Image (cartoon, rainbow, N blue to C red; front, side, top):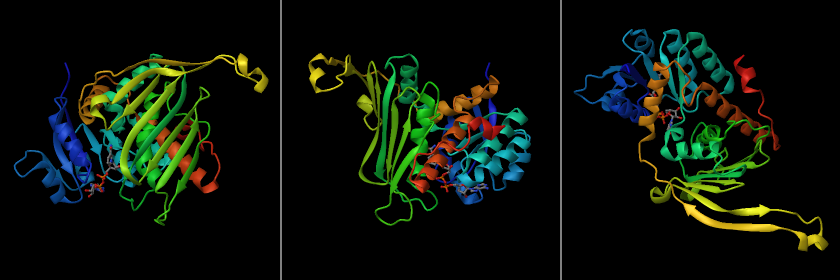
Length: 351
Ligand SMILES: NC(=O)c1ccc[n+]([C@@H]2O[C@H](COP(=O)([O-])OP(=O)(O)OC[C@H]3O[C@@H](n4cnc5c(N)ncnc54)[C@H](O)[C@@H]3O)[C@@H](O)[C@H]2O)c1
């Protein structure tokens, strides 16, 4: 039998209301409070006649014995201090992405969760979509074969953020998806990034990240705030099949293409060209049926299940830390105009 646990959401700005709505609707959770420095904002989210309480002090909220867990949807620079206080108070913690604003404080959060024997989960929302769950299963089952390349495009007319560049704003999504779907997670030996600021905003508004894959293939992420067309697409080329995920096409979000190139003998020079064997496979395209379940609802269920089953959640603190470690390497690569090894092994950071 599953237990209904109590939760409070901290932060009722742009994203917090989505957490409030999903925890309220989840049979696994009883939402008891919403906390924001601005009480009017919290009140607006819970509604005038709601029994969900409004709090303005995180300290007071964490002292409440009737709260099992908190979900933190405040700005990234505040995540660590709130999460550390929550573990101290014995609460389980869900944190919005990014886990923190730098890998060192994120590592402290991972260590504190372990010491307190509490769950630390990161809301890498895309990892709870039916499409990404399908893609992960497809990769793990070998449906695509060896991964040759991954191209991820996330471009649109975006708000130029005051505190972060386009990499820190948009790439956490692509990186968290790669971490989730790749059989060995996100573990690049090198990260190269190039950015451009053609409008003079003082930060990259267009960005490209390139990372070699352990299989010998390559992953590439393109993020852009200046594109008039919105594109959310990932192409994963495998030795057997290619998968295309177009998140803005509900009729055909994911398609599997049984098409590709097989290289047999390669010519060393022009005289050997006749001996070359290159064949093109032109097989079927299949479109799997996917449910339309809201990702945050599955995420809320997973948070409860990981607590009930005393296990790590599907997107744990280490996943958040791996993403931050690559983002930090992106920033270092931009500064040095060269490929950069992620600075510290993630394991070293938490030890
Ligand atoms: N998962 C996703 O797809 C997704 C999408 C958007 C934003 N986010 C993340 O959600 C988080 C919040 O982003 P946002 O755009 O909603 O920010 P926001 O600025 O709109 O809202 C933040 C809210 O937190 C409150 N707040 C700040 N410090 C507080 C404190 N110490 N105690 C209580 N309340 C406090 C503010 O008053 C504000 O209402 C960020 O980490 C962001 O990256 C995630």
